Image (tube, rainbow, N blue to C red):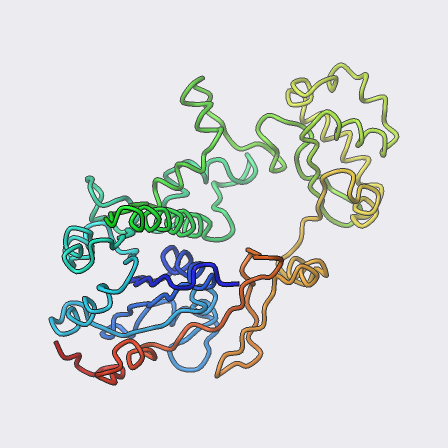
Length: 389
C-alpha cells in the first residue's frame, strides 16, 4: 500500500534533516524528485564515509534516500532554473533544508513560486529559521542539542555534557517538517492556495525539553542530569547492574513497583518509609539503587528478562550489534533487503510504519542525475547537459 501515491514533491536537500523527512514521503509512495547540485557532485552525504558503494554513493546516503529520484541541476543557471520551474508547475510541494537566508535568495518561497502553481506548498527546514537575527547562521544537530539544554540533561552527573548517540534532532525535524508539509497540502487541496511551512532544528530541539521545559517555565525548576539515566521524578526508572551486564527497569506506576517487589520477594521494601510512595522513592533514589543493585547483581541479565517477561517493563542494554542481531528485529521485519546495482546484498532499516500490516517496500535512491531523462523526457538529458529554456 502506497498511501501517498500521486503526490509529487520536489526537494532541494542534503545531509540529514531534509532527506530523512522526504525519504518517508517517498517510501509511502510520493514521487520525490531530489534536486542535487551538479557543480558540487550532489548531496555531500554521497561522499560520507567510511563505507562507499561504487562511484559517488555511500551507505550513509542510501540510509536517508530510499525510493527517491535524482536530477542534477545548477539552480543559479537560468536554463536550469527554467527546468526547475517546469517541475514545480505540476508538483504539490517544494521543500528545502538550506540555510535560513537561502530560500528567499534562490526564489524557493511561496511568493516567488505561486505564479507557477498557486497551490504549491513550500517547506523550509533550516537551522534557526528564516526571519530572525540568525537566519544566515549555519547550524547542525549537535549544536542544537548543546544550546537547547539537551546535552546538559544527558549522561551521568559526574561525566562531561553528552550528546545523544545519533542525530536525533535532524530526524525529529525532518519528521515534523513533512508532517507540516502534508498538513499544508491537505489545506491547499481544499482551498486551492498553497503556503510556506517553516521548521528549524533549534525550535525542535527546544521543544524536546517537554515536561522539563514546562517545569522551569512554571515553577522555575532547573533540571539537571541524574545518575543511571534515571527518570527525573519517578523511581525506580533507571539502569541496574546484573551479574553480566546492564538492564533498564521502568516502574512507572505503583502497580509495577509492587510487581517488582513480589518477583524479587522483597515485600519488606514496601513498608520501608524511604520507599513507601513514589515521592519518597524519588527522594531516596540513591539508597534504593544500592538495594536493588545487590538484588540484580545476583543473576545474569537473561534471568531477569525471563523472570519479568511480559509482566514488568524491562529491557537489556544492548550494543549496536546486539540490537540489530536481536531475533525480535527479524520477527517484526525491521531490516529490509534493498538490492543496489553495486551491492545486491544491501540491507537497510525498514520503514517503521505498517499499512494493513505491511511495511512499505523500499528501493535504493537514484544515482546522481539518473532521472534527468525521465523528468525532462523531451530533452533526454544526462548529467552535465545544458537544459534548454
